[in-house]
Image (cartoon, rainbow, N blue to C red; front, side, top):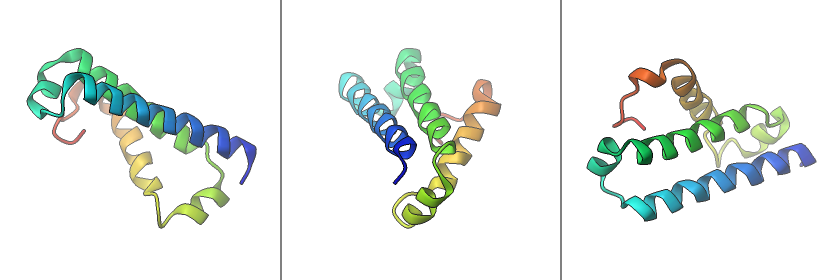
Length: 93
């Protein structure tokens, strides 16, 4: 694995931990997520950053791990955030 892939994966993990911390703080109630702007923004920005970081992983790494991780789904979610943030469906997120 390339060192740049390792760095990106470490950052992705950190954003995953941020999401877990945010959920622990606010609770796992979807109605709270939908109604609390800070909760929504915190989780959404972390998901966006995960997608952004995944775009820079080497093709070799993505091919080797494609059965464990849905890289195309991450890219799709990143596109959703990047191009439709103002009209995003909170149920999808």
